[in-house]
Image 1 (cartoon, rainbow over the protein chains, first blue to last red):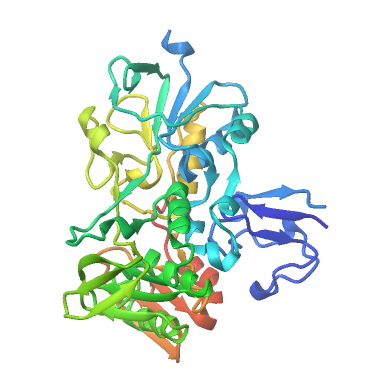
Image 2: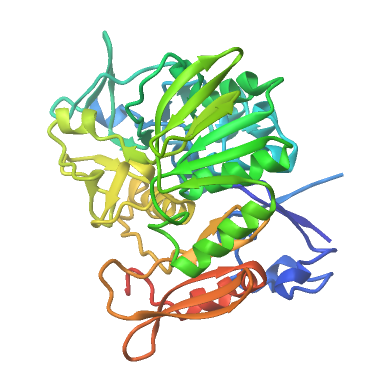
Amino acid sequence: MKKWQCVVCGLIYDEAEGWPEDGIEPGTKWEDVPDDWVCPDCGVGKEDFEMIEIG
Amino acid sequence: MTDQAPIVIVGTGLSGYSLVRELRKLDKTTPVVMVTADDGVNYSKPMLSTGFTKGKDAKGLAQGVTEAMAEQLSVDIRTYSTVTGIDTGARELVLGDERLAYSKLVLAWGADVIRLGLDGDGLDRVYSINDLLDYRAFRKALEGGKRVAIMGAGLIGCEFANDLRNGGYEVDVIAPDAAVMPSLLPEAAANAVQQELQALGVNFHLGTVVQRVDRDGQGVKLALANGDTLAADLVVSAVGLRPRTELARAAGIEAGRGIVVNRALETSAPDVYALGDCAEVDGQVLLYVLPLMACARALAKTLTGERTQVSYGAMPVMIKTPCCPTAVCPPPAGAEGEWDIEQEGSDVKARFLSPAGEVLGFAVTGRFAVEKQALSREVPPIHSD
């Protein structure tokens, strides 16, 4: 499971947690997140997220 | 010599850094010099209105110190350097006594805050928050304070009102229109946001303006046009932005509301480009994140040899009022149609429908905010190719 961070606002998408508010189940890999999913905090698209290593 | 001159980018805000980030994905070696009037610290301007909610001060909102950015992006960053002119003939940026040659020049220097003409002896307690340095000064001035008056009920005024309430401050909002965010939201959605902000404890004074700000002990006293007076520790001015165009105009570069560029982000001067809050792109001045990121991607390609036009899709704007989550995609100016409103309390789903029933814009608040993506898919893109 990886984590991805929005380069604009720093929001983190954690594959383990998914994003249930937008119907993305826990465990959803980044590549399976819909292409038109946008950052819930600032509205930028998937292309503005970068993979990060956390702990 | 021009061939060896670097790409020069003026501005280290979201536009400047986003452009360089995209550029370095395509080209790791072309020399790039960034010039900034401030300290060059990387931060995201939209996040300045979320500090209290996220528990971050100015330092916490910084995403990278200047030295780290320079190293990470392989660029030279000149801080505290004020541009005084552009010599488009000689292809040189003028910085006081110094001249800096460019192969290509990118103007990403943003917008200035509009300042209202106010009377009184307390004007040094009126703060505009346009960058991280401003935010740092504002937070310092706020230490020990309890009460903030905000001039302006636009997106920034409303976001700061919510954030300061979350930080435990008493908040008064003063604005001339009858509703909040009048240029952005249809009335039903605006009223929903206002109601939820009121439920959070924000005091609104709409339909009036601040006339005087006078010192009163450690704080200030505000005199409103409607005769009311308010006490506050300090005042936040959030009455709008104006793209910076003067230096471009002085250099003979065409400017309207912003620096005029086509969809390839080219100004009227050869090898000079503009993006972000200072730019009027194909007739549109959109001071939001999404257009800026699209421009950064297109321009990075152009600067590395593949001339690329930006293509704007639907451009929804997220309004960071956590007490009433809101997203809006305004219909095109002058579009024919009317608002179709579904509403339950402060949950509003407003769709702007053309006579043929096509969704041309929307505003969603509260529990309907989650429908923003689905609705964005229905709205025709700004650029259809």
